[in-house]
Image 1: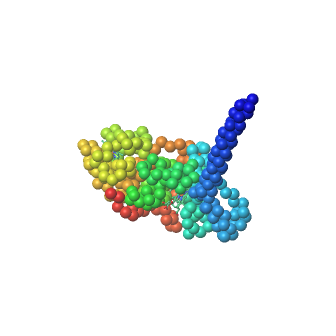
Image 2 (image 1 turned 120 degrees about the horizontal axis):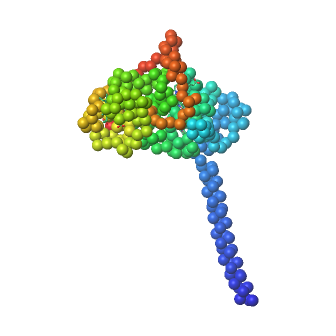
Image 3 (image 1 turned 90 degrees about the vertical axis):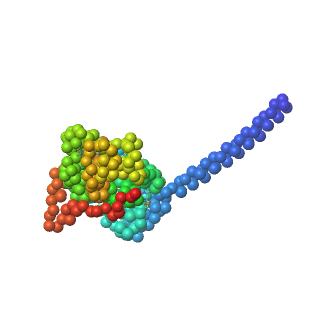
Length: 319
Ligand code: HEC
Ligand code: HEC
Ligand code: HEC
Ligand code: HEC
């Protein structure tokens, strides 16, 4: 019996050791949990935001503000955009001044942006990026390649474009069938070039055109890893390949039948944005604007500034 007791006691001592170890581990996990909770990328913005609202006279909205992850969820187009967890001022352009620093700055607003209600369109259809992420790096993901990175000023600059110009690639996901659209100068220029240079003599696009060259209907979905970059300088992106191929096809694709168009740099960039906008996409019909409405909106009226003026890109193409 005594032996048994001793054994039990040593068991208890062992158990006690375990208990201490386990509770220390548990405590450590709680600390780490709290640390994560309060060291989010968005915590400080969410503290600042209600103060900002209060400062600009929206005392009640400031009081009603609840901290936490915020999102625009639109299952119909596969959007779960948590960008607004940080970009909290986005729909307050009538209250907050545009001089506020990012990410609390209100979204620019004008007569055509207003046709894309944030609650219906989210953010990523126009901007790209990873909508479900709640860190700056995660949301503004990567910046390399052209799959779906956020189209930042930096990425645009690397490709000789402004952010506004580069975003037009995504505008045309939905505006593909407009002959021309206000505020889409790059794409409008490219659509004119397709006609002027007679690309469809050799290429099928949406069921029409010649077959000397490959079909271009979903050119934007092409995998850059399957391209020959041997004669392309700079980064191995679909963008670079196309810009250089459109300028001098004979250099990028030796022995091609495609003529050297010797386009101006801004023309080949615009045309590349158009080619990259031609993708298979999940947008249901109600997200596709009426091309006739766009055409009507393009008609210059005495007070309108919507006439397209091709703007030369700010910097010559990188590398
Ligand atoms: C965790 C916070 C956070 C999230 C989430 C976030 N952003 Fe940002 N965003 C910022 C901050 C901070 C800046 C300013 C500094 C910078 O550019 O990194 C910024 C800047 C930007 C800019 C200006 C970029 C430039 O190059 O000038 C755009 C556009 C933008 N964000 C869009 C988005 C979109 C779209 C999403 C969702 C996919 C998103 N952001 C998610 C914090 C965030
Ligand atoms: C219909 C397309 C569209 C949608 C939807 C959209 N944006 Fe934008 N956004 C733009 C355009 C265009 C610009 C202006 C780019 C420029 O002029 O450089 C812009 C600018 C921005 C900027 C930079 C502002 C600045 O002045 O530098 C941020 C940040 C931003 N958007 C975040 C968002 C967030 C967050 C959402 C979702 C709530 C969103 N956007 C939804 C088209 C859109
Ligand atoms: C005289 C015929 C001809 C004309 C006109 C022509 N192309 Fe091509 N294109 C070709 C041929 C052949 C190829 C395949 C060889 C190569 O990659 O150059 C090709 C390849 C391409 C590719 C690569 C497609 C892929 O998936 O491999 C793109 C993009 C392209 N052309 C765009 C254009 C555009 C835009 C225009 C008008 C500005 C145009 N082409 C005019 C013949 C033509
Ligand atoms: C997800 C699809 C989608 C994207 C992306 C998109 N739009 Fe639109 N856009 C629409 C729809 C749908 C309408 C029609 C809205 C209405 O009339 O109620 C519209 C309307 C417009 C109009 C008014 C004239 C017209 O055609 O009805 C302009 C101008 C416009 N968009 C420009 C842009 C620009 C510039 C961008 C990129 C910054 C953009 N759109 C991105 C779907 C989209």
